[in-house]
Amino acid sequence: MTNPEYKYTDTFDITPEVQAAYDDHGYIIVRNMFDKEELTNVKRVLEDSDIIEKHGYGIPDGKGKNAKLVIWSHPGNDVTGIVARSRKVVDSCQKILPGSQKCGRIDHFPVAGQTMADIERINEIKKRHPLKHVELDPGDALIFDANLIHTSGPNNSPNRRWALLYSYCLKSNNPVYKHHHPNYTPLEKVPNSAIKDCKNYTDFSGKDFMDPGVDKTVKADTLDK
Image (tube, rainbow, N blue to C red; front, top):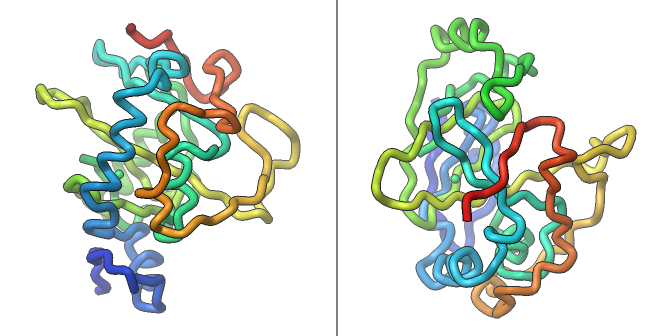
């Protein structure tokens, strides 16, 4: 059985061994993908700008809480967009069913304010692919297949839980018709050093923020101010 965990270095690459682990488990964990200075730069965008107040909204989790989200279709040129375009990023506690990506697409249905996979099928899949809690430290990255069954529980701790999720799609998988998710646009890569070099914390032009009113996959509330 392949090992899905790796530690990031400047020479880290997707070798045949890494690819085999990803194909086998449906995910890999890259420890220390971002250092303290890079995380501080990202945190400054989230805490010192109006990105959440202006573009955020809440999605009911069915348990009396809201998951607070800011969704955009294009990365833009601020620090969070630079992270998405840096060479070391391909795609962050998550719960997963390792290997479940091999089960193919599963029907999803509206639950609370979000969409959830068919619970009866999930319960059957769990018998062959037991639940795993993915514990990550600041700077770690979880890279997983779009078909890997995953979820996250409510944050009952007194601490804030930030998560940046970047999704990538092949050019060949461009949507047939235009809808609320974006069509293909080229992604211009930047060097890894750009995450530290970027000092744009407030200009979010070009990100194309999601309007919850046109998002057909969630039922959103306005974000608590």
